Length: 309
Ligand SMILES: [Zn+2]
Image (spheres, protein in one colour):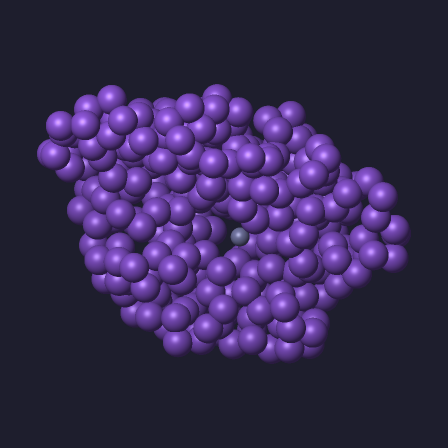
């Protein structure tokens, strides 16, 4: 199936109230794991590359790897640039053939975020590419945080409406309490569901959740069993994620879980087979481990089977 735009995939998720997995990749094994898992579950999927991934592998390489693989499968796939903070980087992705880009100017004041985002929307839309933007600051919210502090950090639903109108973006990543990485929280994961519901109601568009890795305990344990040190690693629980989807999330990003699965599988195979020098026998099990993670994610988000009709 040819590459699809982000909005084609997310429009339906928005209408039917489920979420699509968006998985970061920067090499062949990760990409194969994601696409094979999605194909087997008949799920639409988004593969995304960060600025670091573009630097590591090159935008053209990433694009052509995706192109080579989508031909073999029958589910819709979009190639997305994650957290584009730099105009030149976004242009590089657009030129390479990405079908979705994120402009992340969320660190700037509101008006500047609008200005930078609109500039990208004008260019991307002229090329038939969908655009994601972010509002608010991605930061874990603890119970003892004051209302003022919460308002200063998280998305303001009214401002979200203005932002969407003025920029013309296709989907919005509202900061609702999640944070990036494997060490998100000291306590339990928290999302401001009421705020999220309000944003959904007022904007009536696909919404994106960042910082949403689950950091499953069994993956952490396995990696640690073979020497990894991940003390305090903690992610968003399945229940919290499910509720976020019910409240209107349609794209859920994940990177950390695949990394932990990779490290666990690599460490195991290297520790158990000290004589092994064939990279395929070393990387192959990591690919299988990532595939399992992608499958359980897709199932959790409700997008399994959505590509079949
Ligand atoms: Zn993110």
